Image 1 (cartoon, rainbow, N blue to C red):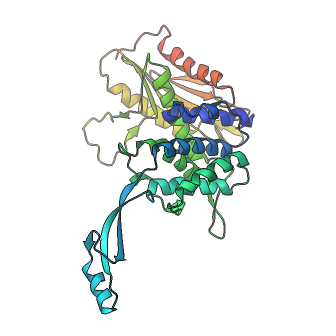
Image 2 (image 1 turned 180 degrees about the vertical axis):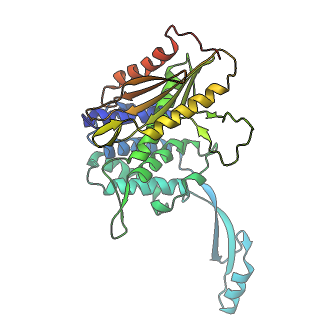
Image 3 (image 1 turned 90 degrees about the vertical axis):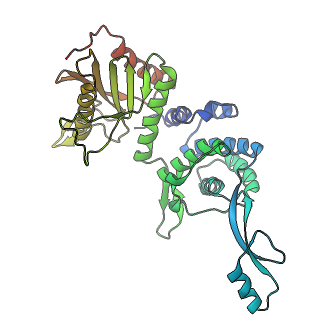
Length: 358
């Protein structure tokens, strides 16, 4: 998929900047203009800038429960522990108390991710130097087992919301690049795995349209099943990747980041059948919501382009709806990627097409 590595890595930065709008704020200008030879340097540069910003505001601290033996009462006396001390002729109290500490999960995730980057040979010394200096402020923070992090349990609130982008980036690194050696040690792979890149690709396209195309409404909305009897037991949720809407005109986009944009059997290339079935189902059920109102509902499979010889660029009419299959070339300069995305909106919402009436 990668023709010009430096262009592709720069475009990952742009994708991240749409997915995480914090990157558009002050302090990240240098990252936007740098050339990166590998993904590790890009992530190290973003983390170095982000952690530097966070240190200026102060590390997030939260109250953590502590239990220890002390000479004077602190917090609440733990009676079983204190009695045990008396029986052992120890003249101390066992107390339980809450302590405001920076040794919490968010800071532990940051430190763990940085330590893995520092171990990687492909991270330039300049970025390592910045990160090492910042880690001096994390001396009281523990590293943790990356595989044991429960990402879904992390909650952000007003006093730690500045960590949101940094933790999301750490999740992308740890979930998408983490490998385990035979000895059980962790190290980072050379690139992000396909599943995590697919999530980033989806979020990038959604946020791009939300920001750059105000003439349409961009959401990731759920679609209701068109049920004859209203019984929906065990039916899965139909969750769209990107839904673009202008009045009663709708374009449903299913974004796919695959190594191969087509499936092959006996040297015959065809579209991924499951993807096609899914987008068709979404379109027909979305269309049913309009009833007899004039409307136009279309669907699109938007694959990230690969270097394969066959790249889908097709448009079909299926049961009265348009289903198209396109590719987005992420190996081009970002202005060209932007033009490709803008053309999709222009092509679907500004052609002289009459709305369909049932």
